[in-house]
Length: 273
Ligand SMILES: *[C@@H]1O[C@H](CO)[C@@H](O)[C@H](O)[C@H]1NC(C)=O
Image: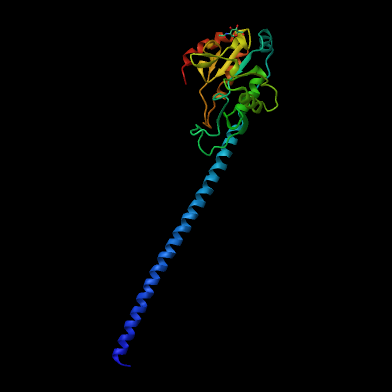
């Protein structure tokens, strides 16, 4: 073998190595790209899994909050209390729905107050102007317990400024065949005053001494501030306890001769929430 041949062989070898390196580079780039693609796919899949986990978790947490044991013992009345309550008339508690007991949004709403991914407690299908509309309804925390307790103390009345077709469906779901939300007033029973719906309590009951209204909107009870219990508007806060916090006061109000003698002292609270 001549030295020339050997060097030619080396040169050939170099070319081979060079083209091999080129192919290798192409291969590495391709492999990298493939790896990146599958990484991105893996990431997307992981994110989907994570949001599913969050969804389930949130649902779980909400269920726990809704059904956590609340200690508010309904004690049987003492003879003195029984005597007292026999002397006053059974009172009426008027309940607003939206942002007091529930919050809902419907199809096609661009912005909602509910955190994305929070599942509704129930969905209502309502036909409005011949268009089917789905309402996603979220229950205020403790609403079931609240209704169960106060229905033993008061005659309950639903008074909502919403349309009857929607309001009656919500009331039906909250009532859940327990039968204590059967008296209902809707938008057509409201009076429009200064551009907002006002609820005329005299239409519900003639004796204003024994009627209480629970409403997040002060304009709703503009005509009856001394009958009102203000409550903060609720949209989505899962740790809200406003309904629970009202139980002691409502428990006591049963015994008063005239609810206005107590609730008129609440006036400093009557600001627009
Ligand atoms: C409220 O209702 C009562 C009884 O139905 C009625 O006499 C009164 O005029 C109403 N008030 C308003 C402001 O509509």
